[in-house]
Image (cartoon, rainbow, N blue to C red):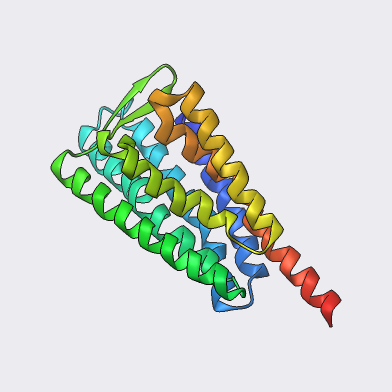
Length: 215
């Protein structure tokens, strides 16, 4: 999370609980894939907790490694994983086709960001009560467009209303974060997205309820 080590570790524990509940509500391979989202956020937030702790511990090596691991989540995992996780649940053919295209967009975004991470390793600076990740490649228009398309539009392409709302709120939170916390966008938006991942559990339980009513 973007405010303190305590907040990051607390969020990680809470998201782990949500992720376990989501996995228990999942009954198909596609649902299990989608249910991993809160658990991935939990791991990401725990990693950011280590970034925070590297400062009072005076541990630059830990900071460097934790920063890169966090960036693997923020830059590579989410644009690739999100559209395919949504597609794994999607029964409507035309939506599946669009999600496949968004999956390709996410892969291209991740590939470009990986090149940027290798060429210019990401650094982090605590400032203004937040963590600022220095990743100039992330904010290039084509990169950010492909990234947002894969992550937020990907969710919005679902035929399930709860998942669509997840996408709408994720996109809205991205816009708000960019306007208010642009300097700390990567950290702060991941915080908002992590909070929104509770909707994964809601979506899966909604599917179970709908299935029971259909029988």
